[in-house]
Length: 139
Image (cartoon, rainbow, N blue to C red; front, side, top):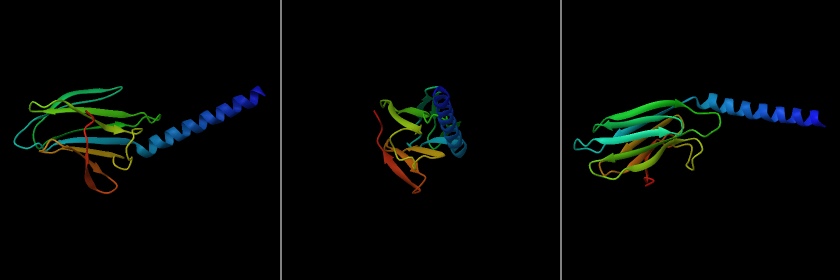
């Protein structure tokens, strides 16, 4: 009886590992970019981080962007979040990428493009429908 349980557990573990690796292979690298469209020469301050990596604070001049790439982990727990601030505003928070977050996964598959408009609103580019969607900050 113990041998059957061990074999069943080994098979289950192997299937989970193969599923995770196949998902990783399919998704590969994710490219994230954040564009400053505040206008009037306003600088946008940004802090990017994940549970494992802190990409630090950056000042993005008006009309320019910051980007980075990373690989999705096999446990479907990859998450990068950002805090943005400009002029004398409060810091605004949003999730820049998550493979397990509660959003439509078609919005941000391999390319995650974010834009802060001149009105200070957050937009994400929807890869499936090829349009910019207004997303509320998570303050």
